[in-house]
Length: 123
Image 1: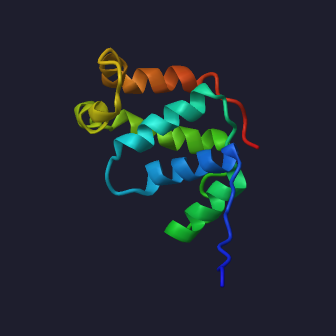
Image 2 (image 1 turned 180 degrees about the vertical axis):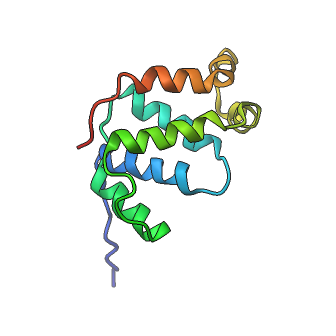
Image 3 (image 1 turned 45 degrees about the vertical axis):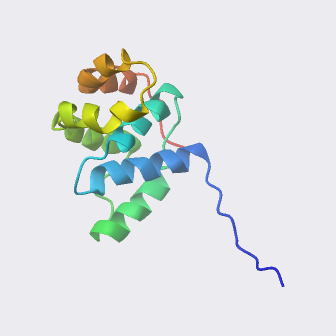
């Protein structure tokens, strides 16, 4: 007898919102989260604000503290200013094919803010 397992599928804006939740709520820095943030920004993916707000409210019990996607990205930006780029580099080094990529990781906050300026509004 075969069993049925539902497969959940999310669109890119929802995945982006989930990644932002991970960055803001995780109690430690995970290099992959920050790497993925840049990927979403380079793809110009808008964020799913409703999904973010629901997840944030579930995790923190706070509703409506971040009312726009721009406010969400400002919160991420504040967190980016505090990241340890040497930890980020160490965490991601094994996954980089080109050692030249280490340079932009060391300038991560600057790269993030440049891409953030080109970010579209939420979905």
